[in-house]
Length: 243
Image 1 (cartoon, rainbow, N blue to C red):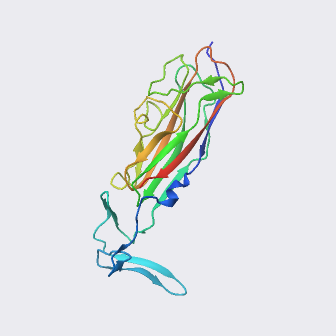
Image 2 (image 1 turned 90 degrees about the vertical axis):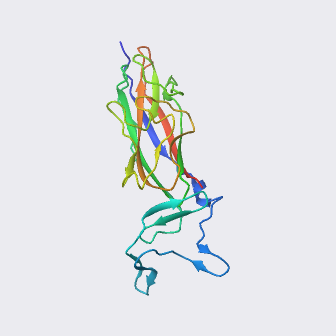
Image 3 (image 1 turned 180 degrees about the vertical axis):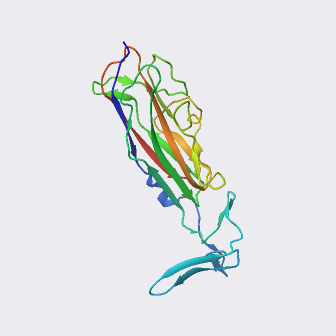
């Protein structure tokens, strides 16, 4: 008789503070010994800082360029009064991933959602740390450490970040792929193939990017002789901006 095993995976979040130092990057305003430009306007008109004791506002009129342009030496963002301050935004849905029961037919799956966006950076990486599914009796369902498909009647545990047969989603670019460029990392970007290694990069962008929504797909499988129990694993996600 196949094992029916209840277990819960909790997904936690830790945001790396390493991006706060902006080491190795420069984002000063355009300047020389003779001049300094706090913002560059290409359009019909605008104002960087209109204020009084009662209000403060920024405005632009007739923007002629929109979007990002850059090289290894510079980046320019066109559009409505863009800020010169780099930032990284990272959110993980706090809900746990509950398989309820893990069967032997590769049908047990769950998911966790997160999104990332990064402005005036060279991109970002999202890494994940964690281990095997472990029961209260210290029995384990070992994680696949190389990309592989689940096999019926064999123990298996892994993740990916793409649409699979019957579950999962591909990364979603918000508002569209012309503004956002995040993607699943190599090893986590193939449908119906799963793995997990402690400390792996699971998602990334190679340039400044708008919001990308990700869904981590989890799959777990038992064998006919898997020990009964309540199994649990904790995964920690870390987002780090790159420069």
